[in-house]
Image (cartoon, rainbow over all chains, first blue to last red; front, top):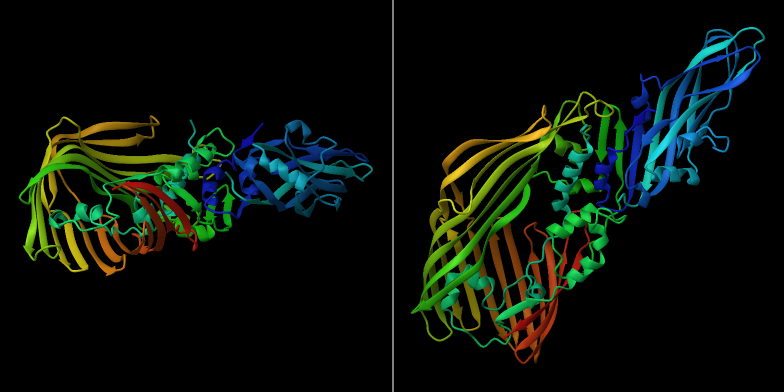
Length: 186
Length: 443
């Protein structure tokens, strides 16, 4: 399991935020951390007439130490993904999950943070862009007060063709996280 | 161990703490605090900085104390807030801990400087990092900053016919920091961090201590009774017991990738130190104090200057270097030179003061104190009302902030209980905090 420590670095810088009350606003280019690592693509192959899901292994992200005494005010995600279809035709939907442990990421009880309407792709070579936008609920915000959070990307697929395999890949092209923390970090 | 940005940035964050700290209290004497830091009664700083005051005759002054003992109510406040000092505590606050360390709260904080509301924005990417501190960026020092000066904690002697033979203990300490251009631009100007770039802080520190056999004379030039012109001169033969100074540059160099790379940062440390341990050949030097006081009726004025020409030569010192070896991932120290000489200078300090007895128990005064860290100006007034004294004052501290003081005292037999309030500021707020000083004086 890969671990990204992109937030741990913020702990020290966050000291500066302790100079006064207010908000600490983190604009994180999440995509830049996973670009080219393989985590930004997800290959799919669905036999004719069938549906299914493909998903990546949950990604562990280390968060700000000490956030437990702070209040997460807002967490927003925006981005863009491109579905690059190679063969067949069907429908594709994108879901992004967060959870406190890896086993819960894709659990049925876990509501996706971000979910796009299904889009038609194909037939054949076709590229469809899916804009991503979502906000965490107040209950989900509490995930960011923990030491670690797990992230999962899932595609929901339906092959609407009768004979051709639906095949292609999802390519993430942008993903921005805006995290607003109220009060002091320490 | 893989270095991360956390350590260096933690150090940098703490390095900028002093700029956000409130100005220190001027005195442990609540009477002086209530007068805005002014020494209105003879003795105290007047005798310390002006060699002529030894010759000025005593005057009837019910508030001229022999001994003042602070009542450290602020310690109780620290004990109550001690959880912020424990790293394991959920309330641990390194900034507050540093604040307590650098600005020991002897007296009670009646009103803390309000923490300003301030949003801080971080921009983070694999190869991008920026911080906009908002209004807090004013706390990032763009000029060198530090603390230090000289003091004489012990001065024992005997006098006869205006002469005084004495031995004083002297201390000197100077600590200065300066943020490097890149780090200053990053923190103060919100410039994005760059790859393969040094972010550093340079620092210099000096500490020395010793004693000085001294011979002085103070006497009246003209006048009689309480009035006259008084002068004083004291020569010191400084003997240095221990000395050390260091110049250091510390920070980190970013890697090819700011975050996510195998080696995000490389520590960078270089230091040259020079010192003479206790027991080595003592440092030697000469210097002097001069002072003059003019008293005419209710008016009194004085000027004293200390440590004139006080250069101390340390004949036997050792010079070392220390640097961080990136291959070994450890610091390496080596000898540069041994049995070499060094020279230090004690900072010249001067005090100009004046006071006027308006009658009816009203005494007003002012003073200007210039030391190694700048100039302070204090003005104050004291009104006696039977066994009570009411005090008020205003001052300009070394950071050129105007501060206020007020308070009072009650005298009973040979004791007085005094309380003084003083304002203080931080660069982060345009509002002032208030500290309450309490002390007991013996007459």
